[in-house]
Amino acid sequence: MRIILYTGKGGVGKTSVAAATACKIEKDGKKVLIMSTDQAHSLSDAFDKKLGNTPTKIHGKLDALEIDTISENENMWGNIKGYFEKIMLLKSEKSIETEEVLIFPGFEDLLALLKIKEFYDQGYYDVLIVDCAPTGETMSILKFPELFKWWMVKFFPMKKKAAKTFKPLVEKTMKVPMPDDEMFDEIELLYNKIDELHKLMLQKDIVSLRIVTTPERIVIKEAKRNFTYLHLYDFNVDAIIINRIMSQEGGKGYFEKWMNIQMENIRDIYQSFKPVPIFKSELRSTEVRKYDTLLEMGESIFKTTRAEKVLFEEKVFELEKSKEDESYYLKISMPFVDKRELNLYQKGDELSISIKNEKRNFTLPKKLQSKEIIKASYIDDKFVIQFM
Image (tube, rainbow, N blue to C red; front, side):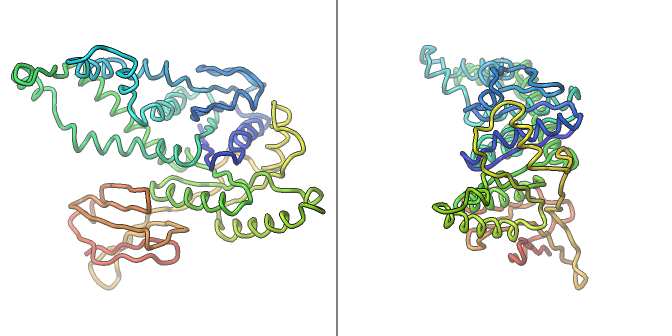
């Protein structure tokens, strides 16, 4: 099963491109599901059909759904939510505010990702297309599994045996209910699901991301930042789609100057993202809605290319041993970075890298865990860290 996620700045036509891709792949004979993780769902509008929390047939072998985070929240959160609710209600009564607080930031996004894993495990579809939320929210979704795992390992080391031992003492002195065996089982189950999801998302032969942009400088800058952050988290970007390109006919007269600016920006995209495959879609004279129109758009974007294939794969992390001494070089592909925004910190076997507002903590490979950083530099779009 192939999983393709579409991301990009809000308003670039991401939903239309994702839906068009789904239609094109279905036309080529594959069984396809397209789903939306954006809270402001617009897949229903794109297909002109009411969608719900279960797959709805659109055409032939193409199904679509829009995740209902409220019902998914109830199904997944279950007893864990109930436990936190008990703690919160020790000195107050249940209210709407309590319910809102119990929906942790990012948890609804996590449910959307877990839905991806659920469909992957079922194996019913050949291809899953995911219409993601705008760039910032998408990054929150994609990095959540790794962050959740990190917090669980660092700050939730308590085991069932220890909890049983101290349960009477804590409950008597602090008046706080301790988790029972069932609670620990649920937390462990959730952790295992997230761990499996994280491993799946990093399988480059299965999962890839495609960035949708328009030929406008401010949008292109956002696409470049998005590309950098995705590389930081080791996700595979296998295509860039330039949407809403003005046609030669439409760019005459009043719009000629705007057409020239677009052409210059398109050249910048080709120069910047090379060798990642780039596809183009012209601005259409009518709304892109319903299966036939979306199929036409999908075929105009990909033409003879099999859109379900992994179109490009790049090695983001490389580890090399120095030929001169006993040092190692960890090379991380990071295009479009201003090195003044790069920060690096090592603590034991853990490395922390931040680029402006994005930060990633990860465990070093075993070969580097006993070594320390002696030098770091940014050369030819790569962050090169030397360990000795």
